[in-house]
Image (cartoon, rainbow over all chains, first blue to last red; front, side, top):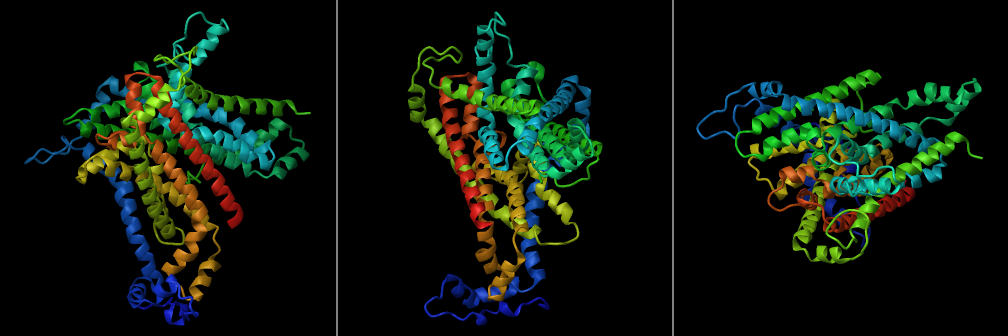
Length: 329
Length: 262
């Protein structure tokens, strides 16, 4: 193969060992075996490209896409793991099961209604804070104030869920304070309700809303707002006509992240929710805790949930009129 | 002198800070309560729960096991993430957007689905649930974050640096190892701490992919399901202190590196 892009400097013979300074790298590039391998693999742009591409593509398509595709494949099987001597047949029954029983549809609908509500709530709570950080603070203090918000988010899901349990329990801090103030005579059952679950989810996910919002608000040049003010816009008009439209990307990324992350929690709904707040993640997990032939059903339900969340996200982005782009950027 | 809107925003910010810190503070305080019963008020104080936790071999094993898994998956994620970023950064080819989307996929799949699809996947490829499966699951989840952090740093790198190395006789591997990699170092430090925290705290993958040996979050979850006790507070507080210290240290480190090397 022609090595058109070979550089003259690529030749190790050009490296002149300085006296006494033949370091590791010089010796490596002068080593005949290494030279041969290097010439074979690295000598042209095309070879370098394939050398990098093949393992990367195998990894990405094998492990990023593989599990999802395997899950979808198994969701169409009538039994899995396959019994010896019998080829599993393809069926749609696992999907039909979902539509037949209300005790599957209810948690499904609940998950999506709850997640949407919590996402919007998180947006409403986080927008003022992101705005405060990005627009009302000196740049030097922004990092400090942001760091203060960041610290609790380094702590894991379980520990923070537990912290919420202590706050909201019947003998928890909130109830003791309320009773101490004489606002209620007996503990209010906060736990195992939509309230405790919502409180926990907002507690766990608000950072994923805050950071994209902050990033997009921080990028808005100050003179845009000054120009709007010069043209006679009041503070509300400035916010509605300049700040809000320019932070749309942050709103989109934040909402998508929070929505997807909050639908994916399993331990938090188990610990903070009750029978009236069973979410679809718990329904799905139920299929995998029992031994036997429940895996295809679980796979089908997971596929339904994945599709539904992706469709929701797609619709939402469409609604905002945002082109498909880098969600995490 | 402050305007009403400024006062309102400042108050709201501090109220949110209280909301973030109060539950954790209560949890820490509760770990010193001299009673088996979780709840307020606290009348007597003790440190015996901490003594008990540090003598509990199950907890210590889970801690070490979780740390091992976190370190292993972080190292793997770094290597694979750097590889993917170096491949995708400069490459221009048909279908690059698709490959980029596939690379980011694990970061946006809801946690429980990611864990369950991995559970099915490891069965399909004949892998037992256990240490290897958890490490694989965490690595898959972490790679997109590493790759995105490295990509953004790669974008800031002047091309002339690699070209200079090539002109001085380095082949592309040597140029990568001696020029690109050191340049990437701040982003690698940030990425590895991020992966460590994600992996150490992960529950859902460890829960669905784990074998008989529980990781620390799985152990805490199991104890919580059987009832709250100040001993759990003590474990959680230790986890809290370790993660917060790690995070703060990393924050300081990355900021200093970025300050000097940029």
